[in-house]
Each structure stands twice: as structure tokens, then as C-alpha cells.
Image 1 (cartoon, rainbow, N blue to C red):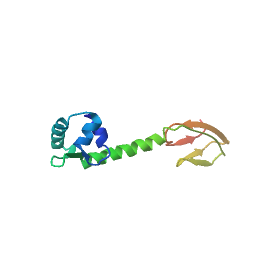
Image 2 (cartoon, rainbow, N blue to C red):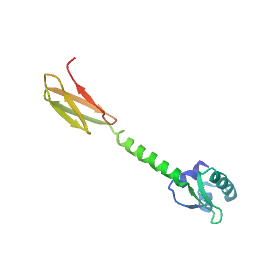
Image 3 (cartoon, one colour):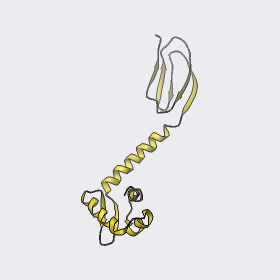
Image 4 (cartoon, rainbow, N blue to C red):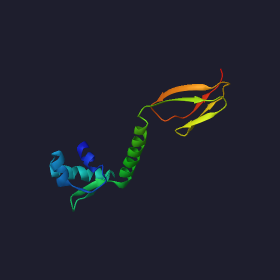
Length: 124
């Protein structure tokens, strides 16, 4: 039945006939399955039209998860750079300010594969 959920993950109504053809399952089996999981508020099932879709609250959760995955995927791309930060100055990258609290200019070389959070450089 996992394949049925892959079809339903667009949030639209789908006919049991369409789903049955796509996943190679008998319509009667799909109807029984849809009746059962509709009682558990996983899908909305209209037995009269033989159509099914994911419950709106579940679809909303899936959309939120997709948005989070897409945002996270952007940070899977590796970044790299070099910068010189004069003493007592700062530099901003990706909304993060890097402060040079040392008494000399800094030459920073960096790579990252996720969103930066904070960087502070100071004398030891």
C-alpha cells in the first residue's frame, strides 16, 4: 500500500481504478483498505465515487516536511571561501557576522556544508 500513498501525496482526489492500474492491486482490496484507513483519519474516502485522497491535516504535515527538506537540501551544497578581516572589524556571510577581536588582520579560509550559525575569532 506504500505505492498508493506515493500516488496520493499530491493531495488530489484519485479514483480507485486509477490507483489499481498504477500499482497493480484489485479495486476491491483497495476499497477495503481505504475504508479502514479512512476510519483512522489517514485518507478521505468517498465510496460513492470510488475516490480517495489524503486527509487535509496529513497533507498539511507532508507539505511542511517537504518545505523543511527543501530548505535543508540547499545547505547540503558545499560552500567555500577566503576572506581577510581587518583587526577590530567584522564581515557578514549568510546573515552571520564574523568578528575579528584580535589585534591583527585575519586571513580566513573556510568550507561549510550547512548554514553557518556563529563565528568569533579572538586571541587565545
